Image 1 (cartoon, rainbow, N blue to C red):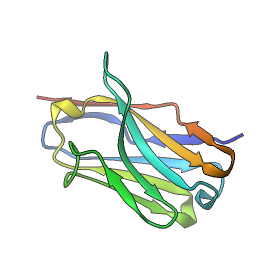
Image 2: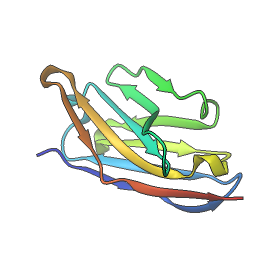
Image 3: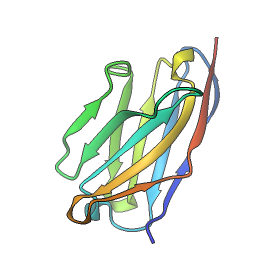
Amino acid sequence: QVQLVESGGGLVQAGGSLRLSCAASGSIFSFNRMGWYRQAPGKQRELVASITTGGSTNYANSVKSRFTISRDNAKNTVYLQMNSLKPEDTAVYYCNAERWSIDGRYWGQGTQVTVSS
């Protein structure tokens, strides 16, 4: 069974930074795309950033220039560097992995990010 282990969430002040990590149970090459979603209370879950095995990245407009997604293939880990955090970034952040050949989608347990004013 696929397992995604997240870490790095917490409470920070506006303007601060956090680095989220998502460690996969196997080689991240087995996933066509990995990324981060977030969900705030009462809101729909949204894609924050993603990266494919080929290195192509996508970002939500609200986080462009502030967040950076990256991967370390040797560590089977995907990161989300979050800078210049804003209160509206407050949400539960979920790691996601996709295996397109079997239409598989996998989720981490979620980690809380809270940005104070």
